[in-house]
Image 1 (tube, rainbow, N blue to C red):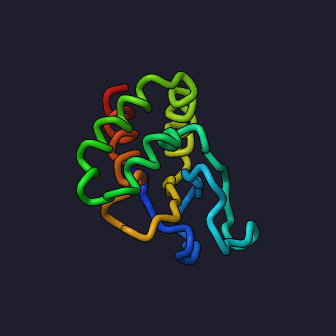
Image 2 (image 1 turned 90 degrees about the vertical axis):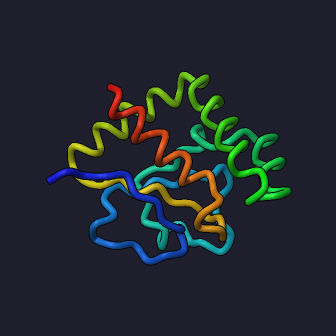
Length: 125
């Protein structure tokens, strides 16, 4: 069975097939109790820089494509992200990995970009 990287809003109920549940937001999600989140990790170091996040939030849909380009450049430049890639690859040997995010927009968010970038990087490895 092939395991996969999934994305999901943290406010959705945990599911048995989530596998490792990793929060990928820099800030703790408003109104979410830590016990209810059922996290296996919180990877603040894979989130967009505060400056990029602020710029993106001024126009989610309008900035989305350019945001994705800038965000992936940031990811590639951070050595700690390489460690997270290795950790993700290890987790995927045991089950799915679900990246959790708090954004309300299910299409225009950093989780989708991160999911695609991680999948692409892991296929190259």
